[in-house]
Amino acid sequence: MKTAGVILAGGLGLRVGAGRPKQLIEVGGRPLLAYPVETFATAAGLDRVIVVMASGHVAAAEKLAAPYGGRVEVVEGGETRTASTLKAMEAMGDEPGDTRVLFHDAARAFVGHDVLDRCLAALETHESVAVALPVTDTVVAVSGGLVRDMPPRPSLARFQTPQGFRLGTLRAAYELALRDPEFVATDDCGVVHRYLPDVPIRVVEGDERLLKVTTPLDLVVAEHLAAGR
Image 1 (cartoon, rainbow, N blue to C red):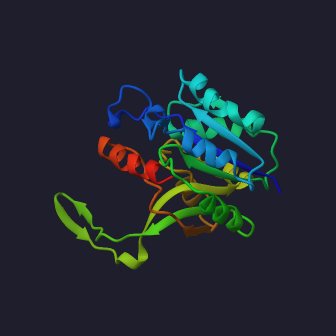
Image 2: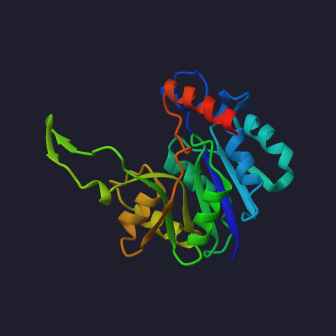
Protein backbone atom coordinates (compact mmCIF):
# COMPACT_ATOMS: atom_id res chain seq x y z
CA MET A 1 0.00 0.00 0.00
CA LYS A 2 1.50 3.33 -1.09
CA THR A 3 1.70 6.41 1.11
CA ALA A 4 1.89 10.13 0.40
CA GLY A 5 2.10 13.34 2.37
CA VAL A 6 0.65 16.65 1.22
CA ILE A 7 1.63 19.98 2.81
CA LEU A 8 -0.98 22.62 2.01
CA ALA A 9 0.83 25.97 1.80
CA GLY A 10 -1.41 27.73 -0.69
CA GLY A 11 -2.78 30.43 1.61
CA LEU A 12 -1.50 33.96 2.04
CA GLY A 13 -2.06 34.26 5.79
CA LEU A 14 -3.30 37.85 5.71
CA ARG A 15 -4.25 37.87 9.40
CA VAL A 16 -0.58 37.64 10.38
CA GLY A 17 -0.03 40.97 8.69
CA ALA A 18 3.44 40.20 7.35
CA GLY A 19 2.89 41.31 3.76
CA ARG A 20 3.91 37.89 2.44
CA PRO A 21 2.68 34.31 2.83
CA LYS A 22 2.99 33.37 6.49
CA GLN A 23 4.62 30.06 5.56
CA LEU A 24 7.64 32.06 4.37
CA ILE A 25 8.00 34.14 7.54
CA GLU A 26 11.23 33.27 9.33
CA VAL A 27 10.80 31.60 12.72
CA GLY A 28 13.88 30.37 14.56
CA GLY A 29 16.00 31.50 11.61
CA ARG A 30 14.11 29.42 9.04
CA PRO A 31 10.96 29.92 6.97
CA LEU A 32 7.96 28.42 8.74
CA LEU A 33 7.40 26.07 5.80
CA ALA A 34 10.86 24.55 6.24
CA TYR A 35 9.79 22.72 9.41
CA PRO A 36 6.93 20.58 8.03
CA VAL A 37 8.87 20.00 4.80
CA GLU A 38 11.74 18.56 6.82
CA THR A 39 9.45 16.39 8.93
CA PHE A 40 7.56 14.97 5.96
CA ALA A 41 10.68 14.53 3.81
CA THR A 42 12.45 12.53 6.53
CA ALA A 43 9.42 10.44 7.53
CA ALA A 44 10.20 6.77 6.94
CA GLY A 45 6.53 5.95 6.41
CA LEU A 46 5.98 8.20 3.38
CA ASP A 47 6.77 7.29 -0.22
CA ARG A 48 6.29 10.78 -1.68
CA VAL A 49 5.70 14.34 -0.49
CA ILE A 50 3.83 17.09 -2.32
CA VAL A 51 3.94 20.75 -1.29
CA VAL A 52 1.03 22.81 -2.63
CA MET A 53 2.40 26.36 -2.65
CA ALA A 54 0.78 29.77 -2.98
CA SER A 55 0.72 31.16 -6.51
CA GLY A 56 3.75 33.31 -7.23
CA HIS A 57 5.86 31.68 -4.53
CA VAL A 58 6.53 28.24 -5.99
CA ALA A 59 10.24 28.97 -6.46
CA ALA A 60 10.63 29.67 -2.73
CA ALA A 61 9.06 26.31 -1.89
CA GLU A 62 11.25 24.54 -4.45
CA LYS A 63 14.32 26.03 -2.78
CA LEU A 64 13.22 24.51 0.55
CA ALA A 65 12.51 21.17 -1.13
CA ALA A 66 15.85 21.03 -2.99
CA PRO A 67 17.91 19.44 -0.17
CA TYR A 68 15.66 16.36 -0.28
CA GLY A 69 16.21 15.60 -3.94
CA GLY A 70 13.23 14.26 -5.82
CA ARG A 71 11.48 13.14 -2.64
CA VAL A 72 9.58 16.44 -2.37
CA GLU A 73 7.69 17.90 -5.32
CA VAL A 74 6.06 21.34 -5.45
CA VAL A 75 2.85 22.26 -7.27
CA GLU A 76 1.06 25.58 -7.47
CA GLY A 77 -1.98 25.90 -5.24
CA GLY A 78 -5.44 27.25 -5.89
CA GLU A 79 -7.26 30.29 -4.56
CA THR A 80 -8.93 28.32 -1.74
CA ARG A 81 -7.98 25.45 0.53
CA THR A 82 -10.38 23.20 -1.37
CA ALA A 83 -8.79 24.19 -4.68
CA SER A 84 -5.36 23.35 -3.25
CA THR A 85 -6.56 19.95 -2.09
CA LEU A 86 -7.87 19.29 -5.59
CA LYS A 87 -4.51 20.35 -7.05
CA ALA A 88 -2.79 17.80 -4.81
CA MET A 89 -5.19 15.04 -5.84
CA GLU A 90 -4.64 15.98 -9.47
CA ALA A 91 -0.89 15.56 -8.91
CA MET A 92 -1.62 12.09 -7.51
CA GLY A 93 -3.77 11.15 -10.46
CA ASP A 94 -1.88 7.92 -11.13
CA GLU A 95 -1.91 6.73 -7.51
CA PRO A 96 -4.22 3.78 -6.65
CA GLY A 97 -7.32 4.34 -4.54
CA ASP A 98 -5.93 2.48 -1.54
CA THR A 99 -3.02 4.93 -1.23
CA ARG A 100 -2.81 6.36 2.29
CA VAL A 101 -2.43 10.13 2.08
CA LEU A 102 -1.94 12.73 4.81
CA PHE A 103 -3.02 16.34 4.26
CA HIS A 104 -1.28 18.83 6.54
CA ASP A 105 -1.61 22.60 7.00
CA ALA A 106 1.76 24.32 6.60
CA ALA A 107 0.71 26.78 9.31
CA ARG A 108 0.98 23.92 11.83
CA ALA A 109 4.72 23.86 11.34
CA PHE A 110 5.90 21.78 14.28
CA VAL A 111 4.41 18.42 13.43
CA GLY A 112 6.40 15.39 14.55
CA HIS A 113 7.00 11.95 13.11
CA ASP A 114 4.98 10.43 15.95
CA VAL A 115 1.78 12.14 14.77
CA LEU A 116 2.39 11.05 11.17
CA ASP A 117 2.97 7.48 12.34
CA ARG A 118 -0.29 7.44 14.33
CA CYS A 119 -2.24 8.62 11.30
CA LEU A 120 -0.69 6.09 8.93
CA ALA A 121 -1.27 3.27 11.40
CA ALA A 122 -4.93 4.21 11.75
CA LEU A 123 -5.30 4.24 7.96
CA GLU A 124 -4.40 0.56 7.92
CA THR A 125 -7.91 -0.16 9.21
CA HIS A 126 -9.89 3.05 8.52
CA GLU A 127 -10.59 5.16 5.44
CA SER A 128 -10.48 8.55 7.17
CA VAL A 129 -8.46 9.79 10.14
CA ALA A 130 -8.44 13.02 12.13
CA VAL A 131 -5.90 14.33 14.63
CA ALA A 132 -7.47 15.95 17.69
CA LEU A 133 -6.99 16.99 21.31
CA PRO A 134 -9.57 17.17 24.11
CA VAL A 135 -11.26 20.52 24.69
CA THR A 136 -10.22 22.13 27.98
CA ASP A 137 -12.29 25.33 27.78
CA THR A 138 -16.06 25.41 28.12
CA VAL A 139 -17.47 25.68 24.60
CA VAL A 140 -20.88 27.26 24.09
CA ALA A 141 -23.20 27.79 21.13
CA VAL A 142 -24.15 31.48 20.87
CA SER A 143 -26.89 33.06 18.80
CA GLY A 144 -28.10 36.65 18.97
CA GLY A 145 -25.69 37.37 21.80
CA LEU A 146 -27.18 34.65 24.01
CA VAL A 147 -25.94 31.21 25.04
CA ARG A 148 -28.08 28.61 23.28
CA ASP A 149 -26.29 25.38 24.18
CA MET A 150 -23.39 24.11 26.31
CA PRO A 151 -22.20 20.74 24.94
CA PRO A 152 -20.43 18.56 27.52
CA ARG A 153 -16.66 18.85 27.18
CA PRO A 154 -15.96 15.07 27.11
CA SER A 155 -17.89 14.91 23.83
CA LEU A 156 -15.78 17.64 22.17
CA ALA A 157 -12.34 17.69 20.58
CA ARG A 158 -10.10 20.22 18.80
CA PHE A 159 -9.17 19.17 15.28
CA GLN A 160 -5.59 19.63 14.12
CA THR A 161 -3.78 18.30 11.08
CA PRO A 162 -2.67 16.12 9.39
CA GLN A 163 -5.89 14.53 8.30
CA GLY A 164 -5.54 11.15 6.64
CA PHE A 165 -7.51 9.31 3.99
CA ARG A 166 -7.55 6.44 1.60
CA LEU A 167 -7.17 8.39 -1.61
CA GLY A 168 -10.16 6.70 -3.26
CA THR A 169 -12.40 7.74 -0.37
CA LEU A 170 -11.39 11.37 -0.58
CA ARG A 171 -11.81 11.36 -4.35
CA ALA A 172 -15.35 9.99 -3.95
CA ALA A 173 -16.25 12.59 -1.32
CA TYR A 174 -15.05 15.48 -3.48
CA GLU A 175 -16.80 14.11 -6.54
CA LEU A 176 -20.08 14.40 -4.65
CA ALA A 177 -19.18 17.73 -3.06
CA LEU A 178 -18.37 19.40 -6.37
CA ARG A 179 -21.88 18.59 -7.61
CA ASP A 180 -23.38 20.47 -4.67
CA PRO A 181 -23.94 24.18 -5.47
CA GLU A 182 -23.90 24.97 -1.73
CA PHE A 183 -20.60 23.19 -1.06
CA VAL A 184 -18.27 25.02 1.33
CA ALA A 185 -15.41 23.36 3.21
CA THR A 186 -12.74 24.36 5.71
CA ASP A 187 -11.15 20.93 6.04
CA ASP A 188 -11.15 17.59 4.25
CA CYS A 189 -12.59 15.46 7.07
CA GLY A 190 -15.61 17.76 6.92
CA VAL A 191 -16.06 16.86 3.26
CA VAL A 192 -15.96 13.13 4.02
CA HIS A 193 -18.29 13.56 7.01
CA ARG A 194 -20.88 15.45 4.99
CA TYR A 195 -20.83 13.58 1.69
CA LEU A 196 -19.85 10.08 2.84
CA PRO A 197 -21.61 9.92 6.23
CA ASP A 198 -21.30 6.13 6.42
CA VAL A 199 -17.47 6.36 6.45
CA PRO A 200 -16.23 6.44 10.08
CA ILE A 201 -13.57 9.03 10.87
CA ARG A 202 -11.04 7.60 13.30
CA VAL A 203 -9.63 10.11 15.78
CA VAL A 204 -6.01 9.80 16.94
CA GLU A 205 -4.12 11.82 19.53
CA GLY A 206 -2.75 15.18 18.47
CA ASP A 207 0.02 17.31 19.95
CA GLU A 208 -0.11 20.63 21.80
CA ARG A 209 2.87 21.78 19.71
CA LEU A 210 0.70 21.67 16.59
CA LEU A 211 -0.08 25.36 16.94
CA LYS A 212 -1.71 26.90 13.88
CA VAL A 213 0.07 30.18 13.19
CA THR A 214 -2.72 32.64 12.40
CA THR A 215 -2.06 35.89 14.30
CA PRO A 216 1.04 37.91 15.23
CA LEU A 217 0.83 36.52 18.78
CA ASP A 218 1.07 32.99 17.37
CA LEU A 219 4.43 33.93 15.86
CA VAL A 220 5.74 34.71 19.34
CA VAL A 221 4.74 31.23 20.52
CA ALA A 222 6.18 29.71 17.34
CA GLU A 223 9.58 31.25 18.12
CA HIS A 224 9.62 29.42 21.45
CA LEU A 225 8.58 26.15 19.79
CA ALA A 226 11.32 26.55 17.19
CA ALA A 227 13.88 27.12 19.95
CA GLY A 228 12.74 23.89 21.60
CA ARG A 229 13.53 21.92 18.44
